[in-house]
Length: 139
Image (cartoon, rainbow, N blue to C red; front, side, top):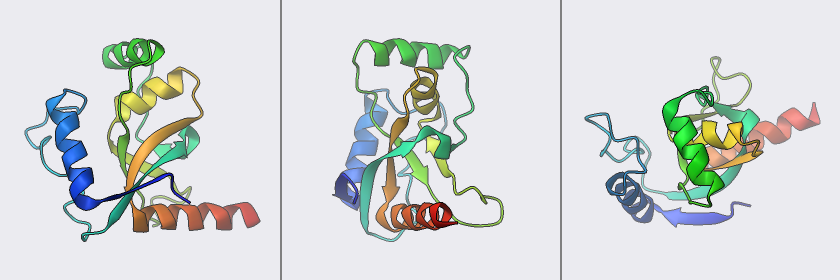
């Protein structure tokens, strides 16, 4: 069961808040856009995802932003959740969660040895993720 269920309007507001606080990547001209425009209005979850289930968190601790985020995390700063999507298809046979915003935060958490990263996902995608990995464990 997901730890936190949130309606779309609250997730969109959280995204805007992260952007204006500078916790969103912000370098892209499209960085301010709502990240789930392609998902119908629904609830979303903020859930801890194991770092080994993340895709596109391939930065290492030599990256300047990752080092800066590591220092912030070590000092207790809440960096906010990463933003993810989950799809099952031939290019994702391991059932990884694609991080499209928050790669540096996820990489910093991984470099610090943390086992999980907070990720926002549409509820339907989170349920598909859980079902996929439940099926994998039974094999």
